[in-house]
Length: 357
Image (tube, rainbow, N blue to C red; front, side):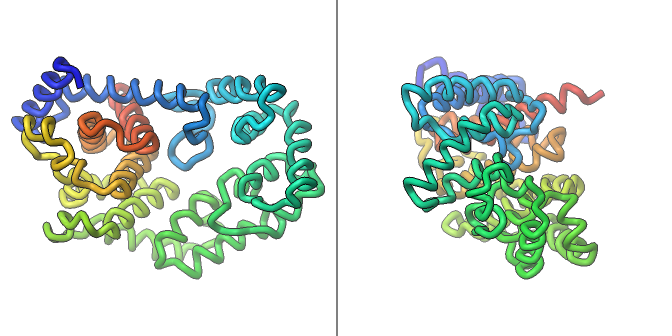
């Protein structure tokens, strides 16, 4: 960390200490710089296979264009990889999936050739690595149709597969959600795969209302300080992440707003960020988000990303996201997925704020 950066961070934290509830100009400037750097790092790493292609991951990207990139950017990156295929045949499958996802039909034949090679050489084993590609050429590739029509394993399903809206698969997913309505893990992913419209149609109003009531209860809940500060226990972070993701999937803006209006929920995401400026910078691994385990960092970042999907204009979303980006800068990274989630949430807040009268 350069001397200039250290001094700038100190200034940010001094402003923060004097006015903890305000998104100050220096904090805004630093969050802008950090988020721009995160986006550049992501695109750089995408060309070295070190990044996930987030074009179809829940809440990371809105098809048709988002604040941080558009459809054309995904297509350009995928075409760059595909142009290398004659020299490097094993270019990432997600590049080919990206082109098919965005409607480039000329890539159907290469996709079928790869699937035929997979079926002939590997007998269709390790199918989770090929399931999205199968879905993108379904039903044109007769030999792999069974993987869509029969070979469902919950943990391997993605939205690319679910977006086929294959009725038996939708009904199977709805049954999983209905049978485990109190298990937020299954409910969260099941709803993300179904989408709001299918969920409301297949689950029925009673189950939907039961789920909504549970989320509202969580949003109003008052946890003890001991529960919030117990960083050895991940369940509270996991539940918070699930609640935010479900609210985003179902479009329940009021639930998201209630969460961010709950001071104790904010304290959960804001854990430790009241440390003094000098201590936070000189001893980053003992203060701020440095106290959190890696998994809790991910849950907190994902929660903010999910909320930015439905209520990007909420002032506390901007403040929490900016603080998280600053803490991340102090701690030197903490994983690209977490960084990208926070950077996207921040840019959505900025755009929404600029559009407000």
